[in-house]
Amino acid sequence: MKLGNFIAGLCLSVIALNAAAQQPIIIKFSHVVASDTPKGKAADYFKKLAEARTKGRVKVEVYPNSQLYKDKEELEALQLGSVQMLAPSLAKFGPLGAKEFELFDLPYIFDNYADLHKVTDGPIGKRLMSGLEPRGITGLAYWDNGFKVMTSNRPLRVPADFRGQKMRIQSSKVLDSQFRALGAIPQVMAFSEVYQALQTGVVDGTENTPSNIYTQRMNEVQKYLTLSDHGYIGYAVIVNRKFWDGLPADLRTTLEGAMRDATTYANNIARQENDDALAKIKATGKTEFITLTPEQKADWVKALSKVHREQESRIGRDLIQDVYRATGKTL
Image (cartoon, rainbow, N blue to C red; front, top):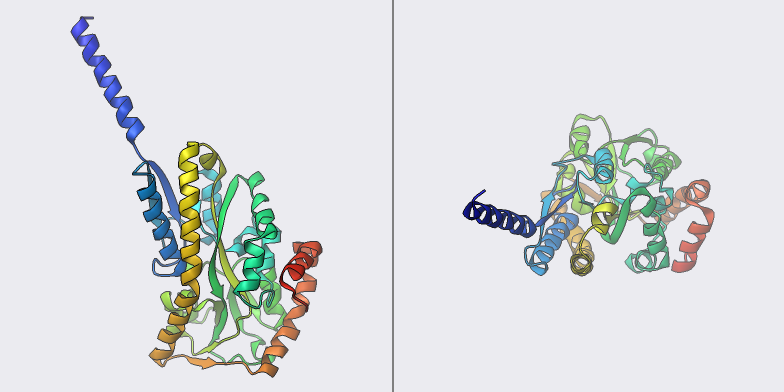
């Protein structure tokens, strides 16, 4: 080989190596809700922070609205490395085997955001996240969505009103138990399928946060909305552990900082987004709002308190008691 050809080939190899080294690391961030929900906005905000702070070394591709995977598919996709980042509802970890996360599904376990954050920001929250590591998952943060309301084509004021109602739920044994305690018939269904199911009468009603209900237009096919605040929906931002551990240490530190700031942003906007969604639903005039009286609320709490006891063997009695102690809760 002539010297000139050798040098030319060597230069091309160096150029190719440099180009490969300069290729950004891709993080596919998949989620199942709309971009204009609190989770959707927080995912986009994380993308903005991550790309700016890593100066282009990382590119975050956000896929909202189940574009890549539906509820039942996304955790497996993460474990296989088909996507790198998710923000699934906390209810989704039960079917994965992490049943302790279903404590967040217990009705009336949290009275307000302050009590909730004593758990998510404290030792209990850290302990739950560490339990995902053996499953190939690293937990990064908890993001609020908010407290749930009930919707139906029947007014839901007292527990007896639920009898025979087909209510959509996420795949959660606790949520199944919740609706059975009320005399309803729980129906597990992917989030992306709920609007059509409500529209066609496959299910009669559902529970969700106002922002999710409004952005998915569920209110258009539901006559009544009960301001029950009976349960909480939150998300765990998680990554594929092998991918995360394989990142350069400086990049991981930078991304952790971006995630902390995105989490502050997510939790700050969640309550406002839900308040705004309620106002927009009310403005349509198509859905009647029901505000529970103190007596009615007490009836709901009484009917649902047994779910805590029923789920002790699944979630862990000690864990539930730890939450009671952290929040000062008594039922």
